[in-house]
Length: 131
Image (cartoon, rainbow, N blue to C red; front, side, top):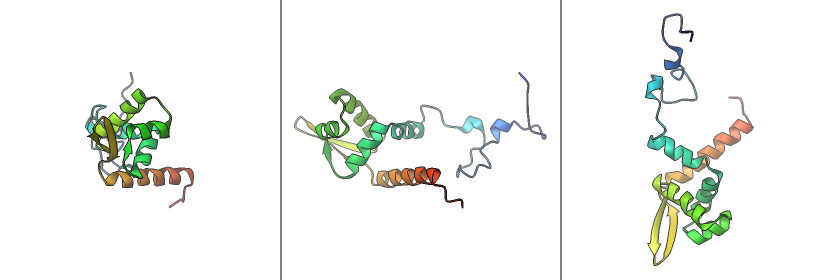
């Protein structure tokens, strides 16, 4: 393996994010990058699933039962339970039991902002404004 470094001897992998305009929080070193078990990574991974994103947007409109979520998304009860439990684990959704029925609602009002911002960023990527 060839050791390629910057002219001043620094490792380019350790400085690649420092001047990245898309990274508002400078990562000083690649070793500072989050691990796959980091809560932030897990929560962004939860949003990357299209089914969970549909569920979140459905629940944003108001409290929903697991059965309503299942009917809306059109997948089996066991699969919907897995998706909802991931959303609960990340704090995006809160679950409450009423008898044998689980009701789900948004767990943090910032979820609406997060989804809206993600939609805006995706829209801007598809339709760049060129600032």
